[in-house]
Length: 81
Image 1 (spheres, rainbow, N blue to C red):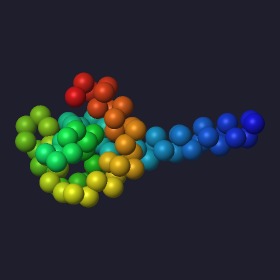
Image 2 (cartoon, one colour):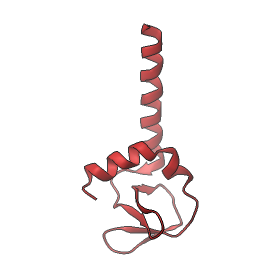
Image 3 (cartoon, rainbow, N blue to C red):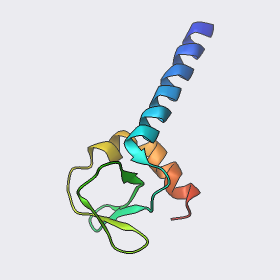
Image 4 (cartoon, rainbow, N blue to C red):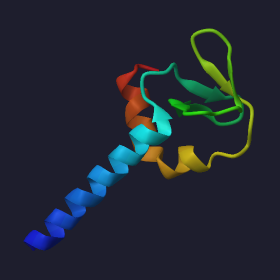
């Protein structure tokens, strides 16, 4: 039981670190006309256009936003979007 808890904790920490490395967590929120609010800006993203206090996502490739969906939802709630 202890080993399973340690492995689960390690997986969660790795998932959180991967989220922080993949996204700019201090950025403005990103939204898509088709999918609504997505989350923070992906680092090095060329598909997001700054439209003021938010970014507009102009691509249908939502791989990272789907992969990190739970953390993106938490980020959106914390940022009051």
